[in-house]
Figure (spheres, rainbow, N blue to C red):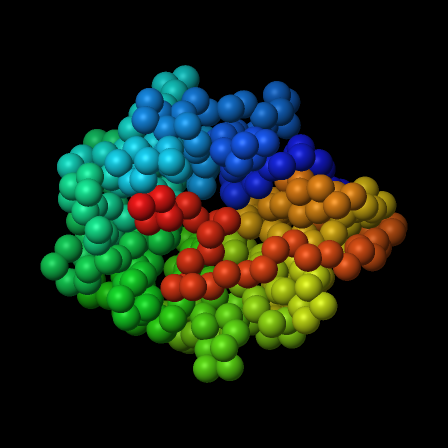
Length: 340
């Protein structure tokens, strides 16, 4: 079943309780971070004082939400990372003298991201931030212009180094392991399986999964110009999408070596949808993202049907060109670099 979350909504992540976070887009192009719950619908998360636009990126199983608040008109001086907690509300994620841009939060409340050491700094470094201990510069002095893109509940992290484009996996207390080059990580589960996209010599981005024991593996079955794996749950189900030569987009679910078109996982409630772009998946296999509903950008929650009664065939639609300059997925991750 496909649930309509509302027009001009991008749903970035979902936890095991079915809570969803993302951003709604206003007519002036500004964004508003939100939390969606089945019993109450959308709740807007108030912007921090310096921001007029915000987006929520990640939510853990306790309902803690992280994201960024900013003013795109004045550059990085307004950029603030935030943590929102039930009953406690919004707090600023800071402590380096500059800004911290959260990318992911684990179930222990540790936040992965990137930071500067001063408000006007041009280079960034990776951090892990917590309410109790503040920021830990996990790769300061080793890599510059870097970002901790993912963290799981085991404390394993994925680090992106911008100058070389290399991607690293690091167990707590150990030396980093190279995953690959020209790659970006968009998900990690508690078994340490990393998913994302890698730019190859053919000029296209290819969805991948990486395991420490097996190394990098491209996800089989994608045939588009560009493909990305955008999320993974602890069962090992992977979601992502690929853009095709005709400008259309296909969302997919990959599990047990089989890639399935999301169109084949919904019932008649999927009629009118096209260009499904999945961005997150929870432990129950519920998938969130955005697509076009009768031609209008709309957020969705997809609860796959075990035996769909109707398989819908979406219209061909261009849901946007995939931009991979520097392997930055602009709609998935909002960085202060975009506002300098």
